[in-house]
Structure formats: structure tokens, C-alpha cells
Length: 314
Image (cartoon, rainbow, N blue to C red; front, side):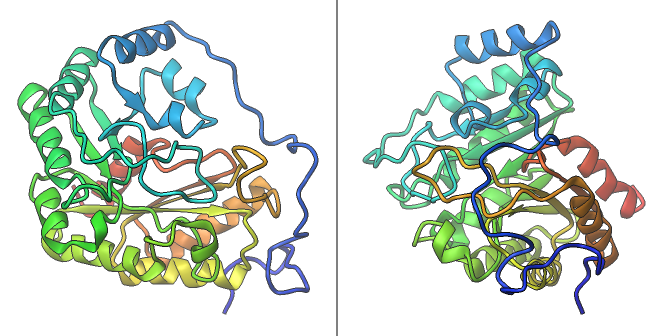
């Protein structure tokens, strides 16, 4: 059974939800707002002062002006160079040869305290050059934030940590409020879009293990991109797979090509279709879902977390 309403366009080729052509222009519903509000320069100044990277800048997130203007940013840990090369991602690929800045957790915690954040999202570049994938530094950063700013809620968006159960356990045991890991795309397209060291089943296994290690108190989260050539049946399969892994929260957004060297956009998904997927996902049992053309992993993260809390009666 396909969850998407029958009125939604489905390609006769059974490979995509619409024409598999690269659009020449962005549609009217995808418009990035210019920076506004006094918080924008303050956020930029604090990040520069403390030498902190953000996925907002490194991944060219379209929501940067909106989030920074609201005084929010997603902090990027373990440097700004990734050891993997995914065909959808704008982050620089480089092998750092084990380089780790041990001052990063303290600087991140200081930024959170000075910002006065109620909720912070931390993410990482993949670090296959480290035996634990960077887990020790991730866990230390969560602990530092707990010490510097006890009321702050922490969401940690991690890579697959090389599939290491011990590394995952060390991260979960640092007690983030939300543990997120992105499935990114449907099973068929995963080898095409993601680095060869990543994997659809590995990601699902990590999410299921996180639930097993963290128990019912841990909120788990994942994300899917649409517009890369997936079919509605494949999206439904991915949603069901995520629910089987007991994932609580979901974000879904439009894939936007960072450059001509990256994977092409197959289709721009209209807002009403994202709304249909949101309703379908909630029907499958996700506690909270954000879905829309410009939605990204950390978009309105606090609101989603509180949706999960309400679903649990908290």
C-alpha cells in the first residue's frame, strides 16, 4: 500500500515521483530569505571569535539566514573536513591524519553558555581516520555542555562511527536528549548518493542499537531527502524501516544540488506533497515530523523534541 495520496504525481518509469530532469530554475516555493534581525551578526561574531564551525556554512544550508537571525546554529564538531565524499554534500573532503583539536568541547560549551541556549544541535564530520570515529570528543562535548549550561537540551547528530557498537555506546552514555543519524535516502539510491563506507542497513542498525543502549528515555531522529529520483513506494519503505528501528522523529526536505559536480536534482517536490508525506509519517507512528522544501535535519529541532515529549506524556 502506498501511503501518498493517489493525486500525487508518480512517474510511469517507476523510478521517481515525477520527471527525472534537471530543472533550469528554482520553483517559486524555494526562496532563501536574506539575513535579518539583530541576532544574525551576534551569532556570526561569536562563532568567529570562538573559532567554531557550523554545518550551516559548510553544507550551505538554505535556512542559515532564518536560523542565525533567530539566534540558532548547528555546531559542527571534529573540524570542518570530512573523510567521506557523498555526492549530495558540499562539505570539504580531506583525510586529517588523526588531527583533533582537544579544545573544541570547551569552546562549544562556552558558546552555548554565552548564547544562553535552551536547545543546541551538535553534528560532526565523518572521521574514519580516528579509531572511534570521533566518539570520545562527541561525548566530551555533551558532558562539557552539561557542566557549563545544565538546563540546555542537547541534540547530537552523528555519523555511523564506522559501525562500532562501543563507539556508539560511549556517545549514547554521555546522555544527549536526542540522538540523530540520517538515513538520507531510499535503499536503491543509497550507494549512489552516499560514500561507499556508509550503508542503508548500517544506518538502520545504528538507530536500532541507539534505542537498545539508550532505552525508552532516549529520543531518536532521522532525516530523508526527496527529489533525487526516488519512487513513492521507496519512500514508504524507508519510512517503515525507520519505524521498525523505533525512530521517534523525522525530517524530510528537498535535495538542492550544491554545485554542478554534485548529484543532479531529479525533481522539485511541491509543498503539498511534503504535507502529504508528513501526514503519512505521523500515521505510521512518528512522534514528530517536519516536512517541507527547505526543511533540514536540525530545522525547528526544539519543537520536534517537545512533540516527542508530549507523545510520551512528558
